[in-house]
Image: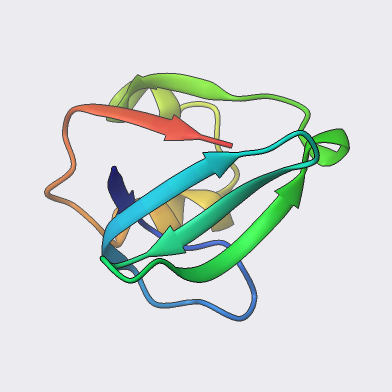
Length: 82
């Protein structure tokens, strides 16, 4: 469980509760306690998963990706970027 910051075209708004389920074919991201799907990424399309502190992750992002990360300035701990 964590926060969804953004990235899927049909779900631009951040979500305070987000979950990621991993199946054989996809990473499926859902919001809230009801599990409304935000989006999914096929496993073949994932090039890298980065886990680290916010400042470490920010160094590796494009300008557009940094804007997404800055939407939640209160996040200071571990971040997972898919």
